[in-house]
Length: 330
View 1 (cartoon, helix red, strand yellow):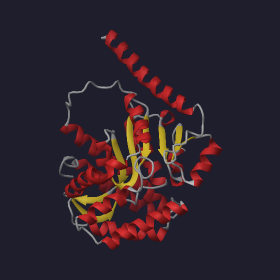
View 2 (cartoon, rainbow, N blue to C red; view 1 turned 90 degrees about the vertical axis):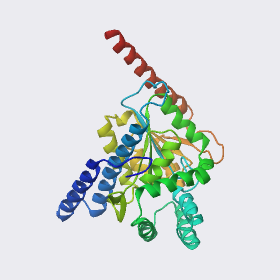
View 3 (spheres, helix red, strand yellow; view 1 turned 135 degrees about the vertical axis):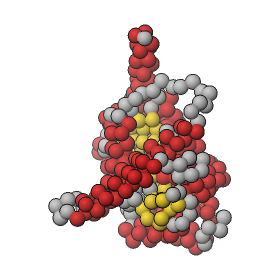
View 4 (cartoon, rainbow, N blue to C red; view 1 turned 60 degrees about the vertical axis):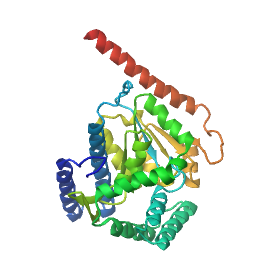
C-alpha cells in the first residue's frame, strides 16, 4: 500500500493468498462452520494482518519522534468501536460526504447511505439487504483505484469533517489507556485505510477495519472475507491479542452497539458508550459500566470508572517497576 503509510509488506499479500486458500478449503467441508462464520473469521484475521502491517509501516517512517517513551504495559490494551462511540455519527457517512463534495459519486448515493444508517440507528439491527447493497456500491467505487488515493482522501476528509466530531469523553478514555502504556486500537466496519487515518490523527496505536483486497497497490473490488462487524470484530481482536501477546482478561473494550456484544464479551472489562437500547439492557444485566456522552449523564455503574482508572494506573506502575528492576539487574 503506497503513500504516507508506506508499502504493504510482501508477506501481507502472501498471507492474503493463504487466507483465501483456507477459506476455500473450509467452505467445501460439509461438517465445518457456516460460510458466514468463515467469512467473519477471515475478515477478522485479514483485519489484524492489515492493521499490524500499517502500524509497522507508520513506525518505520517515524522511528524517532523526539518524545520520551511511555513505560509499556505489554499485556493490556483497549479496543474502541468508532461510530457513535469515538465519532459522533457514522464515519463512513462522513467520508461519503467528503467524497460527494469531490464529485466521486452522486449526492443521491450519499442520501442512500445516510438513510440506511438512520434505519440502522433507529432499529439497532443490521439489514442484510442494506448491507449487501452498501457493500456492492462501496466496492464498485474503489475498484481500480489506488490504496494511496483512498488514504490521502481519508486524511483530507478527516481534517475537514471528522476532527470536530470526536467525542471528548471517549477520547479522554483512550488517552487514559495510552498514558498507562497500553495499546489502543479502533475496531470498525469502516475500511482499514480510513480507520487508520482516524487512529493516527488521535495518536492511537492503530485500527482494525474492513479489508478490501488489493494487488500492487490497486483495489480489486473484492473484500477479504466480509465487512468487519459482529463476530468478525471479536475474531479480529482475538487474533491481534494472540499476535501481540495480550491478555484479554486485562483488556478493555468500548462500544455503543448491541452488535458488538461478541467483542465486549471477549475482554475483562466492557464499557457501553452511548449505548443503543439493546446494549444498555445487556450492560445492566451483566454489570458493565455505561457512559452516555450524548446527554451528559454520569456512568450508570458507580465506582467502575475508579476501578478502570486504578487498573490503568496499576498497569503503568507495574511497567515502571519492571523497568527499574531490569535497570538494576543490568
